[in-house]
Image 1 (cartoon, rainbow, N blue to C red):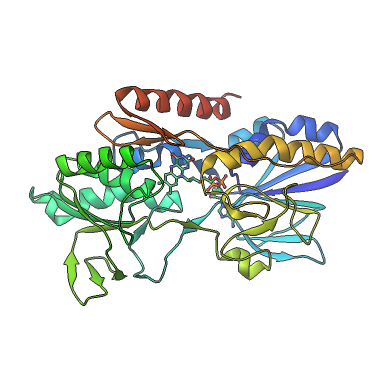
Image 2 (image 1 turned 120 degrees about the vertical axis):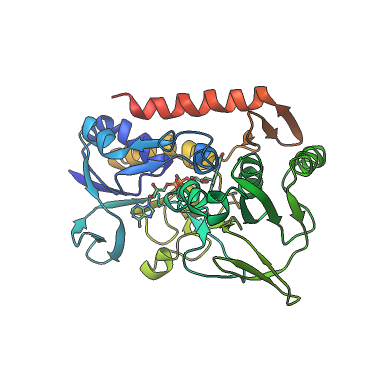
Length: 363
Ligand SMILES: Cc1cc2nc3c(=O)[nH]c(=O)nc-3n(C[C@H](O)[C@H](O)[C@H](O)COP(=O)(O)OP(=O)(O)OC[C@H]3O[C@@H](n4cnc5c(N)ncnc54)[C@H](O)[C@@H]3O)c2cc1C
């Protein structure tokens, strides 16, 4: 038997859990090292802003693992012994492996910004889920004047959150700060204009070309020496690989360097997928679709290893559909230069998300 240790219940590993019987039949012992719950990012903005119930995007990883006969070691990976092929866990255990698969996601990238401890970041998603409670607890929300929120970062996540917060009755002011000259820089021009108009209509104070140096619990400091105040700040300045990878010697802030086969460039027994991977053949954005689509490739690769067959390669799709949830029942679907705004795109998103979640909740 070959021991495969899955670290992190990222999207590709959720797929492997469901297919654990196939892996076992091929001669694998499957172990998983992960926190008990997986939080689905597709619903994270809506749940964090209180528009959907808190557990709407949660998958019980322990239940999923148990129902597929996989041993879950609840916790996180904190150390690695490459020579001895051992993973150290936050619970003090040492887990042996023959093949190591990493899907531990990403953290918020902080490009030159000093962020005080306690300021909310959008990743890990467990941190973002505190947003609703923080807003409710803010003195301005309690005294009825309405909380003032600063969202740092005008990419898809910052836009979604600013849009959601702008329709919360206990939020009086939303300020969206963007370092570059435009918000939604990856979106088609028309979509960007539509979003800017929506945010303006909802009273969001959008500031572009804004150089922030520091964020604290109560204040933002700008490069020109000025400041602005808030009750709650949210940092959504993009995603980077977890710093842990550097400490483990597995990669750097770009991720674990992998070939098209998803194997580490120097360690053929190590695989990485999703946001924590640095896909060497071409740069990939940190979006869920790659983790999802890499799952079946990883499964095939593990099976091919056992059979001594050539390993499959991951071929990223050229364009992926993304649907922004903009609160108040509207969304925006984008694929390449095509975009579609209104209630129907959000309805479509909910159907896709719920179907995906259901597939990991049915046992
Ligand atoms: C607010 C928000 C909204 C987003 N919305 C979308 C969207 O609508 N569509 C989209 O495509 N992308 C979206 N993204 C991006 C998306 O979150 C990521 O691209 C995607 O989650 C990456 O998937 P993954 O499988 O690599 O890892 P993740 O989904 O992040 O899963 C990694 C798992 O590993 C666990 N883990 C972390 N560290 C360790 C460790 N040391 N040991 C063991 N386990 C560990 C984590 O708890 C987590 O469960 C959003 C991001 C944010 C922040």
